[in-house]
Image: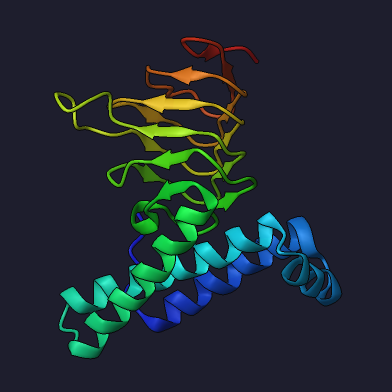
Length: 192
């Protein structure tokens, strides 16, 4: 869904996502400085996401005519991303996540690398998105503008339409094709 192929595109994605985090948490440069000074979680998530997006770009560049420097920069940024992810307790590969991804809280959040996520996805943390086991390696495909509540799980070879809200604690195991609805429960079904 989202492969960053040029430095211009990388710059645009980084600027857009940085602005989203600023709008959510920081609002001003002094708040950003205080976020850095106090080591606030949302600031740490922003730094992880930046390293991940840069690693995504250098991964693409190193496989598409890149030179040895691109490969070395990929290794540098993927290591940086992994160190930050381990500290935050998240296991997320952003290669298949479109721009506009926003993670509000860290800890126990896993997204399988095969999962496809559309633009402007919002996750509240403590989520698991992935396949239903080694015998079923297919992963979910999630549309644009999806809000995923805290503790929600999305499992298996399913599709989630655009503009869906997934309630906290929901377990989604079936595809949702109707746009603009709210789903919740175990297993998840339309609630609004």
